[in-house]
Image (cartoon, rainbow, N blue to C red; front, side, top):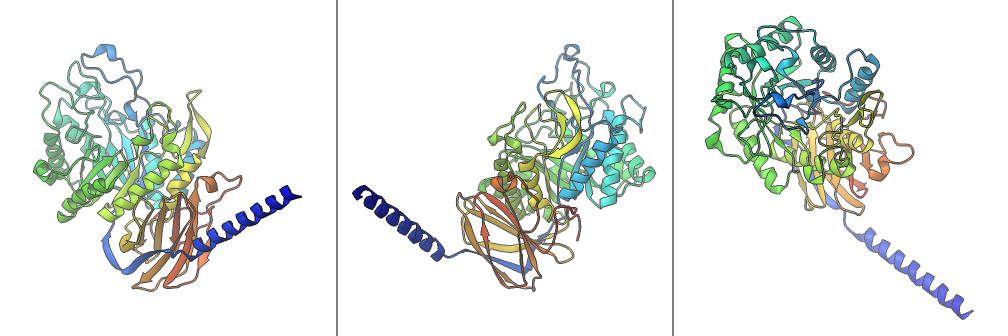
Length: 503
């Protein structure tokens, strides 16, 4: 009896402490967020998407033929091999459906010069890679998505320097190289009538940033700056108005205006980031953005991710929710810094070369074959879609103040060209967090709440439907789950509806 009485007293004390703790929690003031719906910081010139390549394969490498070979592991990063043959219309249909669900509205589409000009003066418009390109451009045209067309490498023997592997050689003949690109763009825009191609980038991650590999080698190859100038002349001579974007440097290169005289040839500025964007990195983005905007040019983050979480081989960490949180944080910092468009690495990826970056599963890593059933990588897919589905292209970024450090809470608000408000919130803490959103300026309409974290996504049944609706109010209180990404939006989207491209 005495033991039972002691046990009863312990239970009572524990219950009292539990109630007391909850009372203290309930008395805590919500974190205040102030959003001025009438004060715009800038209007984006792009939107949000992910890299979508058409390059089939770069193997066999035949490295024994070259004095300077290409690296054996991931010789083109992971920018090849994920897309099924174009004859697999079932898989391609599913891939396009996923692109529509995610609301990809600013996507980087990647090819190589070999796709359309495998031999000197011999253009081919019906290769497997070109047919894949038409598949993507047809989809973009039908959805009004903007395409940032990227020639990753040339990869042609006929225009490489002797003894240099074609994947890493600078072009030997700049005139032939520039003529090839201009002929491609003429064909796509004038013959095929594609209007979705808004920008063109001539090479991936050339020397000049913190790291460069492709384009680096050759015997007195001239500089990549020479090539940008030559391409601009060729496009101008042919009346091709698609802006050149560059320098496409990585990895979040420091801003140094004294090294950027060549940007006079550009209509847009873009760089890459792969370590996660810190507060210092945000300031670097701001400097790049201000430089571009002062010239009337957009500034894009055309690849981003966080290799500090793990990468290489078939490392799975890039498809984790931890990576989704990091990537969402990069987007929040980018919106504050003035970034006009975001392109995640990557939409489809083999996942067995430099990590599992893919949002969708198109490839069997064990059997080395393409899948007939294309499915999401849940944590990456929904951790990306919770923002991408609601971010209209050409949105205006609104002035937002958060009464909490970035290590706990991040928030940005945008307004679509049609006036629809979306608020993105990241709770980085291990605890549930209450936030109070105070709206000033123009009146807001109804808002719908969507939320994801690892536990929510991995529940037995999960659909990204609104979990709550708020009537128009100037003050709204929202509870954010731990380690979560939430969106509060005027877009009422059920899980079976497509994401927003432009509204």
